[in-house]
Image (cartoon, rainbow, N blue to C red; front, side, top):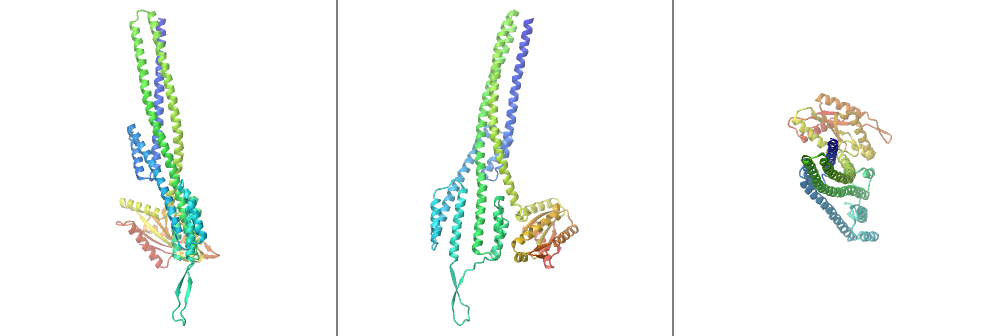
Length: 532
């Protein structure tokens, strides 16, 4: 009887160890599923961040997200990851080709300038030195920025040398003696070019690192600026744009390179995990079958035993065999768990690092998108933002009718402020007007700077009477603003044209009608509201 009790206890202990082994296996599988889910979500998020760099790469990443979403077969996912990694490597080769092309074109431009007749000796010597120093290709685009800047400066110097030439003109008619007079080329830039240049750089969207450079250039624009100075400012703006683009390109290049390395690592880790998982399953199956066979063998031995002494001897021997198998199974599972934990830890560290980089890159993209829809001077929505918003509102209106109105506003006699007090005073005026619009309109309407001194508002839910009353209040608020330039008080007023969207309107028809109302307001003496 005591032998039967001992056997029962051994059986219970054996059962507990078996249950513990099964539980441990389940925990490992749960942990693996959790880590795999985390990795899949990160790959999906990362692929979205990479969109817009290359159309073929976009399509590949889109298909990868689809495969992950529908839990496709692992070999298919592995194949797609491999082809995506190859695309990233090809993109790296494209960048290298573009770098070689830039080097070639830089030297062509330098040699072309060197062939120009009449270059000052000092300039020709400096140009020769620059071409010699830059003979060897560079490793990155950013290394060409100072070289391009210097080459542009040499072009500027060459143009300046040419501008010193003089032209002759025939003397005035009806003079007693006809004479030829040498007239120097005008050194003052044409006002229309100054205005156009100012408009271009006002709408220029650059990163915060270069915004200050653009602001300094804009502050130097005035009606007395020379042609050489205007050209120099133009070249400087060109340098700033190139540097800004190179900064963004280098950031994208580093991100793509890191992404390629991480995807390669992920691919290798997934392949290793799959191979290891298959080997583990095979080993577990073998050990389980062995345990099952040993337990069945022990049960058969009990049935065939003829005495308790035989049972005791048989059970003790077989229990030792089963205990050895369990020990082997436990050791194997522990080693597998440690190996899996090590792989997952290494992969997690790399994924977390790449995720931080992707978050920074995503933030830069969002900032760029925001800047592309924002007016740099007034911080209001710009024309591109207005076009996008108004088009969506028109579609919404035609789907379900509601009160939708557009208002076009223009500062009265703004040119006089620029001509009399300078562009800085004009910029300050636009900023104050913009602040007034935001303060007194707030969330009641969409506000945008359309261009120059012209603004647009989009109202929803305002009928004609309410809209006109609201605009008149705004008009009076603007007229009360205490402007003072060079100790002179200046009155600023606004003319406004408004109209509601109609049944058959499109974007252009509605805007032209409101713009026509603005024209009528100007004709009526300005500082008024006209509704059509």
